[in-house]
Structures are given as C-alpha cells and as structure tokens.
Image (cartoon, rainbow, N blue to C red; front, side, top):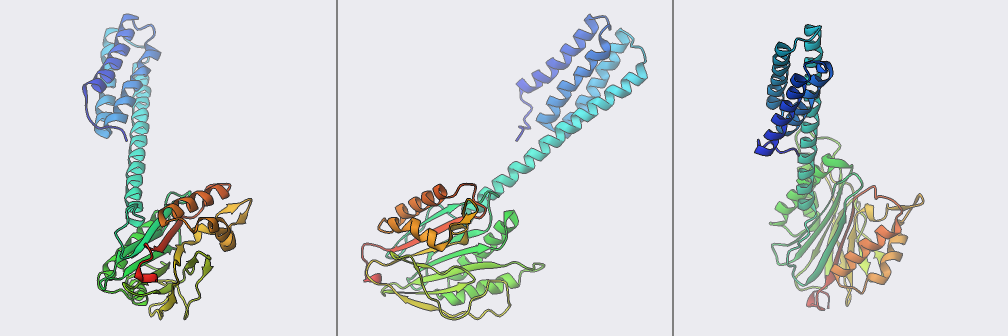
Amino acid sequence: MPDSTFNAARVAWVAGTALAVFLIWTVSGGSTGAGVSFFYALPVGLGSWWWGRRAAAILVAASVGLYLVGDAIHPVQYFWSGLVVRGVAYVAVAALAVAARERITVLEHSAEELDAIRAALTPSTLPELHGIDAAAAFVPSELGLSGDFYLLTNGPDGSTLAIVGDVVGHGPAAARLATFVRARFAAFAANSADPAELLTLANGALVDRPGKADELVSALCLRFGPDESEVSWAIAGHPPPLRLPGLEELPRDGETFLLGAVPDLALVNTVTQLQGDDGLLVYTDGATDVRRGGAFLGLEGLARLLAPLTPLPAAEMTAEAERAILEWTDGPIRDDLCLVVLKPELRSPLVA
C-alpha cells in the first residue's frame, strides 16, 4: 500500500521534478513550451500516488499555476486552449493515480482480513488435549480461502472434542460464515460435550441468523472420553471419519443433513470402539476432490496415498499427507484441503 507519510525525500522528488520542468521551459525561451509543460504530469502522478486525493488537487493547481507563470515569462500561442488541454491532462493523471492507490489499499486490507480469518479458522497451534496426539494440515484453495475450519478443544467433562466443518461455497463470504459457525461451536463446547447436541445448537444459530438464507455447512463432531476406549461422534452432511491405520470409513447411525438445511435437525450420536493404537482421520472433501488429468483422487486414492503414513505420529502424518496430496495433483487445488489426525497418546488408558 502506498505510504501516506509526507517524508522529505518524496517532497523533494515532487518539488524537484516540477522545478526542473519549469526551468527547462523558461531556459528554452518557450520554444519547447508546448511539449515540456505536459511533464508536470510526472510530479502530479507521483504525489497523487503517494498522498492521495488532497495532494492530487494541490499538485494539479500548482502545475496549472506554474504554467501560468511560464506563460507570463514566455507567452504561449493559443494560451486558453493550451491551458484547458493541460488542465485536463493533469486531472486525468491525478485521477488514475488516486484510483490505483485506493484499489491497492482495498486489496491489501482484504488480504489482511482474509489472513486473520484463516488464522482463526485453522490455527497453527493446537491446545493440549487429554491423552490425544492431534495435528492438522490445511491448504487454502486457489481462490485464497473458502470455508473449511477445525476446532480442537477440551470439553467441560474432561473429554476431548474435535470439530471439522466445511461451508458450501467459496471465497470471502464462505470464510466469514465459517468464522461465525466456528465461533458458535467454541461457545457451545464450553458447556456441552455431546456431539449431536453441539451440531444441533450450531444449526439453530445458523438458521436464526437474521437476513441470511441458503447458508449450508457440513460438520463432524467427535468426543473422546477421558477414561474410555470409545469415541462418540455425530455428523451433519460431512464425510465420515476414517479409522487408522486401516483408513476405512466408520459406519454411522441415523440420517444426516447439512447444517442450515432444516430448522429442526434430528441427529444421533454414533459410538465407535477403538482398539489398541487405533486413531481417526477427519477430512474435508477438498482432500478427495483434488485432480490429476481431470480425474479425482477420491477416497480410495486418498487411502492409497496415506496408507504408508499411518504409523507416523500425528504431526508427521499430517505434514507428509499434505505433501503427498499436493504432489499427486497436477494443478492448483480448487477447494480447501483440510486433514485432522487424532491418535492415542503413548497408549493412554483412553484407547487401551
């Protein structure tokens, strides 16, 4: 973004350039006046780019004034027509410079906002979780950011909660909706550790949003109990979790609907027993929708890529999984790619 500070170096550039044009005109005896005076557009453009609208108006007026002074020293033929043409040229240069400056400012502010949203939706630092080795990988789509998010936190009953979601749609609007939904999940998780209840509460918050329509979100919520070898989970239009190390989909109980699809969402919890070193992989459809030569990777392809990585700790597995998927595809990804790996930590009693 152009700096708005009136520092000495920039003032010197603008003043020096305008003075140089004036001196060349007067020293030449006006013989080159017709062309030289147009070069006042250079300091006008520089000042407008650096300092904005007010400076642009001042510099246009100053350049016209110098033209009048030059004409007083060496009269110019067709003075009035020359004055109008030069004035229009100075104004046009100033307007273009100001418009470009403001456009870049808007783009940079949007980029900063999206970076902040991305950091909130997919934080790089995860909290300490009870008995769980957890890690996440996230790669934004070619659009810069869509609507994938994850939340890993400790439940109020000493359990561990993992929530992964994906907003239907792309771009900043989807990212802002994802921010809203994730914030609601975080607030609800402070008082409840029931996956189906958390999804139902989030659905209510989404449906009740004033002036909003057709906002749909898929989500999966898992609860790891503090002293048990089972995981309870509920799903709302999201791909089921994969059991590690076999990478097979877990069967679910009940029906599933996207959050926001119906006001009264009826969800049930599925209970899954974990054996030995079993873990879970949760993903968004961006992980299976990557393409090579027009063909999707798909669930079978994802399982094939990740199978050699399942013995790794969670952080290493997610990093290697991200690398493997990006190496497999032959172009920019068209949807956010999100993976969350959850494994028992040091054979804790949670999964013994």
